[in-house]
Image (cartoon, rainbow, N blue to C red; front, side, top):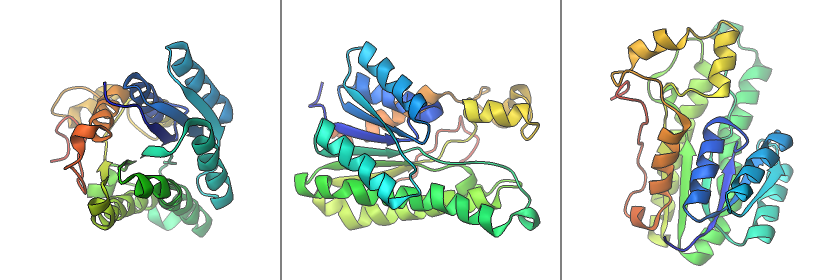
Amino acid sequence: MELGRTAVVTGGGSGLGEAICTRLAQDGHRVAVLDRDGEAAEKVAAGVQAQGGDAIAVAVDVSDEDSLTHAVDLARSSLGPIGILVTSAAISGFTRLDKITLDEWNRYLAVNLTGTFLSVRAALPDMVEAKWGRIVTISSAAGQQGAARQAHYSATKGGVIAMTKSIAIDYAAQGITANTVPPFVIDTPMLRQQQQAGKLPPAEYLTKAVPAGRLGVGDDVANLCSYLCSEGAGYVTGQVIGVNGGAVL
């Protein structure tokens, strides 16, 4: 096992973020579980600790600069300099373009795009000083190809993809990699909520769009993040690596 580092995971309280926190802890890293839902973050951190890992939970609003800065500072002071950042915090929903209000549009930008920017900017100083860092942003297949009634969500995730490529170019010479993972349809609590609300069809219908014949699960994404955050991924940067069962090529 390689030397454990401090990993910050935004949106770590459920779904993909929870799976990523668990996997990085299994890899030997110290994990700061950041989430708007502080209670959910506490449960994930407690689960990591129960398995012998080192974790803390921090309630945070990634769209708020002061809140995000405080959370990252707390992770740094509690667990040590930050070597790994995975940005999984996001909001998602379905609204046709002509029905999207400016407030809704700005909220998506604030959480999904600005929140990713603020997270990366807060974690970078430790990586620059160490001349080593791993940044993984969780984008979306919607940011690659668009999605019905998701112009706001798709735009923010497309922005995350472009921003990640730029970060990779700027910091490659300093030993810092930046890659983005755009999942397609992953079975998470958020997806199930949207199905229950009638905004997404049932799993058997969604599966028809996936050549692999099943929906993704959190571990599918977490396994890729594990590699991208490892010592061995030092020459992989600026890449868009889908986890989609062949649905997006």
